[in-house]
Structures are given as structure tokens and as C-alpha cells.
Amino acid sequence: MNKLWTTWLGFWSHTETGFSIAMVRISMGLTLFYTCASPYLSGVWEAIWVDQQFGGIRPYRRVPWFLELLGGATPQAVEWLLWIGIGSAIALIIGLFGRFSAFTGMLVMNTIAWHNPLATGGHDDLIANALWLLVFVPNDITLSVSSKINTGSWTSSTPISSVVRRLLLAQLIIMYTSTGWQKVSTHWVPFGELDALWYILQQPTWAWRDHTFLATWYPLTQFGTVGTWFFEVCAPLLWVGMLWEGTNRKQWYAPKWGIQLVQRIPPRVVFACIGIPMHFGILLTMDVGPFSYAALSYYWTLYRTDTLGFSNPTTA
Image (cartoon, rainbow, N blue to C red; front, side, top):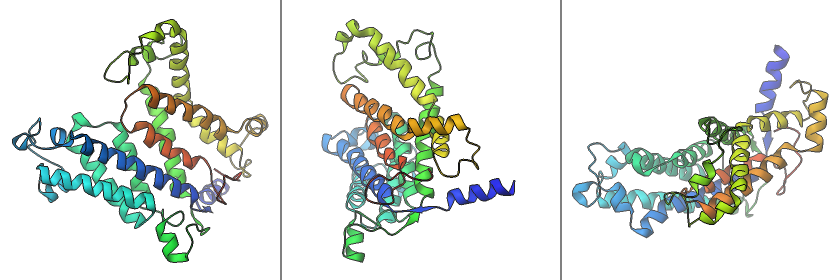
């Protein structure tokens, strides 16, 4: 038990350069910018977040505390909220006031998500969760204006804790796993109809364009359906594979066949080669808001980086 506990503590005490975290910061900053700027530029922000008495489409008897602090569900307060989000996003992208920018961005995302449940989605929580975790690490230590000011260089090899990156990776795995188990129905699982993707692509609510031409390729949509489901429910295997490919294999009770498997087929590469094209496919065919942008931002956590390139890490 002591050996296992020591291994566990050692696993969470590792350090690495801040490259992966910096890329998450930049990617999430871009996602936050899109989330706040898109409704503002299109003009729909007043309809979905402003109270009915000021021109919105629904009344609000209660509003989140941060919006209340800004003045309630008025046009001026909601506009201030979006500008705070846009400002936080820009600061994250360029790497300035990293922790504070992540914190204010998280406040904006949670306020948006809690204010009008009819105009939100799981992607808002996905963004807010990432921003919250970025508060607990110097996310602007490299690839940032802060680094340029403090060291005279845009980059820095100063080590930071690996914990936040691992928690972000855990969030990605949890997101896929929970989504997969929520899809346990005849429309998704093997030996069922496998028609979920086909129906999604026929709904104007989700589809970018008319996809009736896919009728000729219906079996392909079935393959995409079952493939997506397997990828999501099997996501926890990524974590197991990463433990097995590390140097502490004996401590994690890695079987010989498992070690040989991950050496031949790196689990991180397999995960990225399936997940990234899947999200680009979603972006090209469906309107799911900033979901894919947020999910892809987490993919930077797949690798521990000891240089400005991807290293072959000894641990996850």
C-alpha cells in the first residue's frame, strides 16, 4: 500500500515546460472570443440575454450574481458582460494576466450558461471548466507577452506542475465517456439501427446544409455512428495506455502484452488520429456552436512537453 501511495504521489508531483498549457490557453482564448464575439456581432445577444422589458425574448425574474453586479439583464449590462469576455479572451490569446484573465473568462462563461438555459449547451461548461483549471497554473509562463516582459523572450522553459494538464486531460476523457454512455440507445449502439448520425444530418437545427445526398452513402453514416460511440465509451483506455507506456510500468501493474501493444501502437497517437478528424467532420457538417473548438483545445494536453516540440514522455 505504501508503494502504491508513493507511486501515486510521484505521479502528481512531476513538472514540465508550460508549452501544452500555453497552447490550451491560446486555444481556449480563441474559443472564448468566438463564444462572446459571435452573438455580439450577429446581434442576437439582445434577444437571448436581455430581459423582455428591454427588448429581449423572455423575462428574467432572477439573474446570475455577476450579471446582477453589472446591472441586471439590461442591454448595457449584457453588453458589458460580453466585452469583459472578449477582453479576457484577447488577454488569454496574447498571454497577459494569465490567471486573472482565465478567472474572469470563467465568470463570463458561467454567467452565460446559468442565465438562459435555453441558449446554452455542454460546451459552455467545457470552456468554463478549462478556464477554471487554468487559474491554478501560470498559464502565461511561455508563448506570451508576460514571458516577453519578464524574461525578454516570448518563450520560457521554466518548469510548471503537470497536475493541471493531467486534470484537463481527465476532463476530456470524462466528457467523451459520459457522452458515450448517454448515447446507449438503439440509434447508436452495435446491433441497433445505427441511424443517429443520419438523422442528425437531416435536422436543420444541427446541419449546416442539406445532406439528403447521403442516402446513397447510408452505410457510411452507420459506420460513423458506431465508430463515434466506440471512440467515446472507450476513451478511458487512453489513460490506461498512457500509464502503461511510462517508465513506472511495474507500479501500474502493466501486463507484458499491454506494454508491447502501446509500444507498437501509441495510444495518444491513435486517440488524436480518431478524435481530431471527427471534430473537423463535425465542424464541416454540423452547427454545434463552439463545442468542437473547445474539445480540440483540450487535445494539447495529450503530451507532456519538455521542449517546444512534442517529447516522448516518461509518464502521462
